[in-house]
Image 1 (cartoon, rainbow, N blue to C red):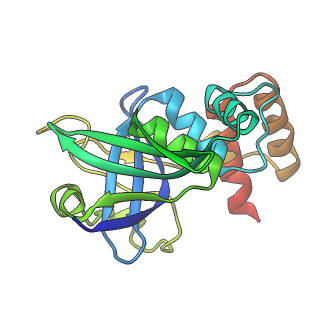
Image 2 (tube, one colour):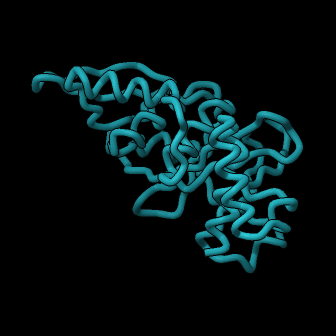
Length: 209
């Protein structure tokens, strides 16, 4: 079976369902997206890895794993999303130590959080992308936005038969703050280890630049 390389498009969070997140993966040589439902902790960990300017005062679980692996010369070579059963994605982490390769089973969210920290590529099989890949539909308010905008709508991925609108972006309250105030709030959020708030603040800062 042929492998398809994926890149991270972004993370979406539900405006209506607390704690509901979706990780959006995009095929590198194509337009299909692979939406994967993940937990709040994993969403924050992935978002922090994507936002290089957010430095937690203490290592998160995935940072600890990276530090542990570095200490013992373990390298994550790649991550493969290899199976989809009843809406659940299964992944493998391909590791190497002393030129010996090992395959470790992992939740997809954890595998991707580690892949980001190791700079490892993410793949899935073409059959999985053919089955679960979608072309995201944009709401009317998003049609005029640029391709790089992270505001997206994902349909029917939280529960079968249930349509939920999921979006990324900063709260309207953040839009009222000046750039200096946003940086101050970002520093406070990181110091308080409120990484979900920190990522939203960082999104708003990035839009101002």
